Every structure is written in C-alpha cells, then in structure tokens.
Figure 1 (cartoon, rainbow, N blue to C red):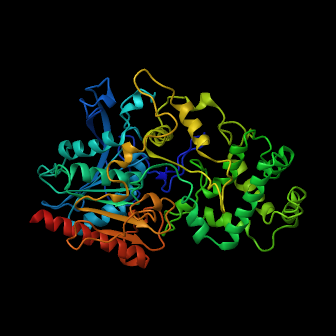
Figure 2: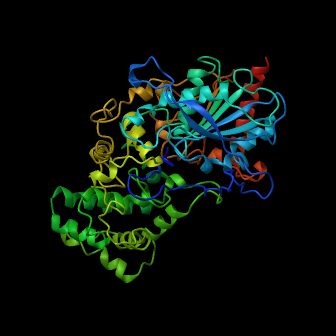
Figure 3: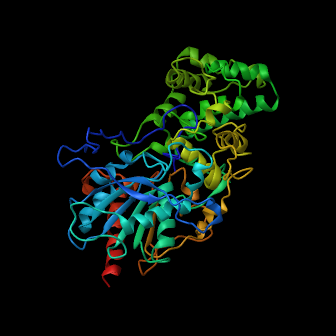
Length: 536
C-alpha cells in the first residue's frame, strides 16, 4: 500500500512521498520518456462506466454515465500472437508508473515474451475522476468491486492505435500485474474475471498484494524495523517511547510540554499530533514527509537513505555535548533514569522535519497539526482523499501502536486518531455514508483473505516488507505457502526484500542483485507457463 506509496499519502497538507520522480508532460499531452531514445508515450482515454453494477442496491441511485480513464501503452516489443500486460496503476497518478514500461517488470516481461504493455490509471486518481469533486456521495463508486470491474471492461473494449489486429480479451491472453493495493486488485481481478471466474483475464502477478484487511494494524507494521534495523537503534526508540508513555499515563502535563519543547514542537496542542510528527521518520501513521523503511529499495535509482540517515543520527557514537545533555533533561521525571539518545532524536527532528513547515506554525494543518475538521471536509479531487476514503470504508489497517511490549511509536496513537479523520472527511451524504466505527472489512476480505486462491495467479512478496503480514505470505496465514506442481498457483517470498521490489528494473537483469535477478527470472518462467497453458 504506499501506502499509501500505499500506503504513503498524507492526510495533512504535505504532498505524498513518491519513490519515482514524475516524467515531464509535453505540450501535446504526451509523456516524455526519461530514456534518451524512443517516442514519447501518448496518453489515451477510454470511456469507462462509472457504475458497473446497475442491479446492486449498494450503488443506488445508479448512473449510466461514463468517465475518461487514462492509459498509455508500449508496443516496442510486441509481435503478433504475443500477450498483453496490464499494469494496474494503484493509488498514484499514471505518470508515477512510467518506469514499469521503461525498465521495470512490464518491460522485462514484454521483452521476454514479445508482449505489449499497458498502464491503466485507477479511477479517482491522477486525472481519471468520474466527477469534478469528491463528495461522500460522489465517492460511492470508489470501491474494490467497481475498480476491478474497470480492469475487465478495459480488457474487452480498449483500442490500441497503430497495433494490427484486435488484442481485446478474451481473444488474447491478458496478464495483469500490480503492487501493494494494486497487487490486491490484480488478485481480485484474476479471481473474479479470470481462470477461476469468467475466463476473461488469463492470469496475473500480485506483488506485495495486500489481500487481507483488518481494522487496526498494530502487530506488524513496525516489526520489520524492530527485527532488521540496528538493535541499538530500536532499543533507543523503544525506551524513549516507553518513557513518553509513562509521562502520559501519569498525566504529567508539565513534563510532556518540556518533551515537546525539546523537539521544538511545543506549539502542538494534541499529544497525538506530537506523537505522529516524531514518528514521521519511522512511517506514519498514514502520514510522513520523508522516506521511511517502506521506501528502501534494492536499487539506488529508486530507493532513499532517509531511514538510515535517521537511524545513524539517533545512535551516533560521539554526539555533540548539547545533544548528550538533553538525555538527562527529563530524568527528574523518570526516577533519575536518563533518556538515552533523546538529544540525537530531537536534533534530527529539528534539522530535517521542522524546516518542512516554513511558516513555523507547527500546529496548523498544513504543517504538523491535524485537528481541523474543515480541512478534512474539503471535497476537491485528490489522491490522498481517495486513498483515505478506501481506508475508511473497506481497507482499514489503521497503523497504531501495540498495546503492550516494545513500541516504536507512542501508544496514544490508536484507531480513534485515524477514525476522526474519516468522520471529518466524509460526513453522510444524501445517498452514501461511510461505515460507522470503522471500515467494513468484509467487502474486502470476501475475495478470499488469507485463503486466497485463483488459477494462473502468482503471489510474490518481500520478507522485510512492512505490509507483509496482510499479504499472501503473512505470518498469520493459516497454511504453509507452496507453489503447485501444475504451475497454476506459483508463489515466491523474496529473502531480504521490501515492498514490491520486483517491480523495479535497471534494463540489465544480469547486473541486478542475485535475489532480485532470480525473482525476475522466476516471473518470466511463471508467465511462460501461463502462456503455454493458453496455447494448449
């Protein structure tokens, strides 16, 4: 998710973290490729039905209207008889996915199988909005089942100018790929409209597909950091958070204010806003303006060292004396016990995070405050609003602190913090309202949850992904994960990898790290088997 990516969209005024820099749009509306050779990608649109389910009471009153859904395609490697690869855009704009055609997984698969690649922008993202605004009523059609129905309709009705023949499904093998939320949508699409459903979509690869939904996500989101980051770093943060939560439990407002002042955040009125702000380098909940563990990557072209910079600054061996002095400043409130590395932690926040609010009004919603109901109720179209709606209605997985045991974020961060944004952002409309007291996860989990299975659907996840435990390879899954002998149900957990790392490429598989190279070769073999099944 990103995500936000999936899971990294802001509910506040910050812009979303992007792993890729966006390409430049030319004056004629085409997208200029970052590569030096090749023609610009032209953006096309399809008239997509807003409502695919005219008989469902869930979408009353129904509409027969359509919206312009954007897509681009690459026919560079296509030969007649080759497959079509549909990259599901997910919770970002079309331009953010361009790399997948240029050097990433779609190019890898196109080259290996004489295929054609398409990137489809999801409804309610980028410029593919059904309406001019996103009120609660207008967002009623932003559901998982409507989104995956878009994929099926697109495969049947798309036009590909300059390509000989009709490549629409089911006359051509369509192979879907998506990562994170789009990975789940890939899985749901293949199960509903593929080999286990209508036979329309031939197969797919779900990368870090978040196929399981739950209201709160306390156990696992920060666990990869606890397990795989440097031990002295985790211990330091855990201890600082324990002491902070002790002050909260004691209702020691004087000490809490001193703690806020140490971080330069004394103006933040809500303790939860303070807790979230100092958690930004760790990721969330929901919001963060710098790259985190989720944005680590095997390639320096796409990754960021932000997390490691944070970790190394917190645990530096010879910190300045003024940092060390801060470690003892609050000891009088914790029975004389110092707050090891608090000074380093606070210095990093002041140096890296506070400048992101040039106005200095840290309590404002455009900076680090969140307690502004009017701001959240703004109905302008935007990816963060669309993602929040999905979170509040179907997806859940609110990132919260564990109620007990070591924690990297304060225990004041619980479901009520995120739920208030949902309630403020989406007041009941005339026809549509969000579920009360949290998302209806049955709308999401009914596709299969941890028992998910569909013919010609591959699952590939990362061992160190923060979202792993709501993916196919979750440690909470009831059954061991094995690929089927017949090739219908392949799976692969990439050792040491993060969030859909397989989607990235560098135009040279042989030069990739071994674990990524082998993953890409595995994906080629998987697709080859799917295509062999098609030919038979």
